[in-house]
Length: 434
Image (cartoon, rainbow, N blue to C red):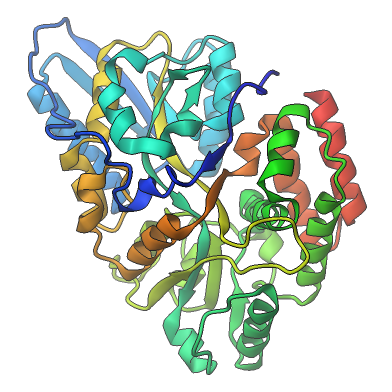
């Protein structure tokens, strides 16, 4: 595995652009025209994505329908797959002979591995306009100076919370520091409210907590070094794990969180937030749409708001830095050329406007940002703009082996099953396995 040539930490002069239009340095007029020449031979594009519920599922279906109407020679077969199932199925398909033409892509070291295996189409020549207006958010989808995918949404992770439950607990301000955050947790518990949701069954939500705490304690320079050399010998990794071990001991999560799903159904952690069964979740920019899909009426949660992860004393990291990234797609190296055309259409004006208006997420196209309607997405977009630095999700930045270890062992640390020392040794061992 060789991921050392990929830059996984994105400087947020550019990453700020992902949310509020600073990415729009280039001209994106007429971007995303579905074409309509229809003079090619008949082709079928199989498209695997992880958006299994509305509003996003319908946004994607509408985009495919418009593209097929304008291009009668193209048939798009959509296969929505639940996120946790998709990652395993996709890896198996890519290693076999039945890979999809277009598939979910999170970029970073994981994508670099796929590129090195000859699995991903280079779309550099035809996507220059999109790369320009998307701006710094493009970095995880580029490798060795070439473009291998496009994000359709991007932004920083933050804490999504129910203002109604905060009001019920007498909390009038969002926390700015880790100490204040723990005070909020204590107040919620005292009011009989579950403070924080965590879908431990799926591991990556626990990993999110370790990513941000690692960024707070280690800082971007240490993480950048270990993206290349994977030494993990700085004491900051141990300090991050110790802080989360202590946090887990306060029992901030829902009962039985280790076996709770992240997103599937009303009993998932997102579902409990959607139904006012808990007060907060630390999550990515998809959370608003995910919560909406799990409310009783399928409408946006009216009291859902967002605040940035608080500062943590004693760390090397910039307190305004954030973890995050985006969701995007790549075309398989053997996919028809029309796959790249459709990929470009997904980040065009029409599809991105619908994506924003429905509350599905934050668009990467600056022309669509002013179409955002939900407060939590507006706040997350503003927070993305204000962040000083965006660190790509560590499970994507460090590649599969180390990334999976972070996710799984973060569950152990937060549940008291894995010591901080064991966690750090697990990183070192995973890096050696490569």
